[in-house]
Length: 297
Image (cartoon, rainbow, N blue to C red; front, side, top):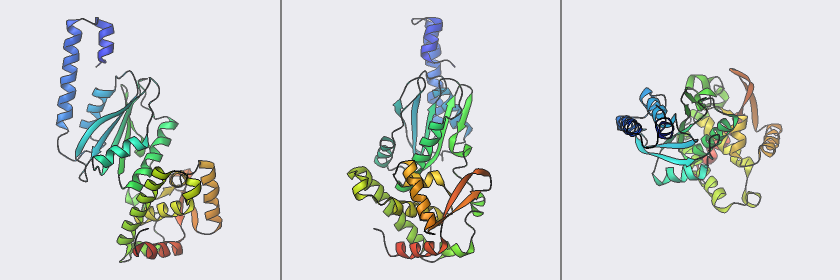
């Protein structure tokens, strides 16, 4: 289905046929939207993907849409947050997560379109998704997926880059028996306290600014790594660097210092030789578990 603007150009702005087709298109989109209902919303749902292609595939400018979900992944709100140009839309994490907090959302699905018709994510799309996923983890708001839609199809960015892995895929990265602190009686409390600490530190960084005066990027990285390992989720080098709040080059140097100090180790991704994952030293994992079991900061 062409966009209303395309129909107007083809059939004439005042064409009754154009108006009828536009109205029919709008009715079909609204019907699809209503059909999403109160059920749990799966980012891979054919109904959702048809709705996205119908409502966004032919848009003439890149547009960012966000689905805000409750803890059961039921839809709270479906909102357009940004509209850009034919080749770019700005993605502002603060706008997205501020709205998520206002709606008390537990998870979000991001969608944007490519007017070119090619749904292949750009490098900028992938980098933005990595950053948003990291921020969401700190705020306990899960980014379920970032979908690019176009007339020729759709592409999920998170699944494409294996940023979210099944527990089985993560096990080979987190199966070291020396890291069995994850099964300790206090592990759940330690994880909850670490998550609260990470959220408050992120909010402080956003509200106060001046990270050079108040920041502790190495500690931020260790907290993020502890949270991931407690959840049995691997952390890539780039994702961990984002959690520091530093420019990537500075974060990489800091990560090397943590590695040299024996606090973290690098492990190659068995499914992608170009990627490394970072792990806590098992002894440090035990100490951090004991630290956060006592409370948050």
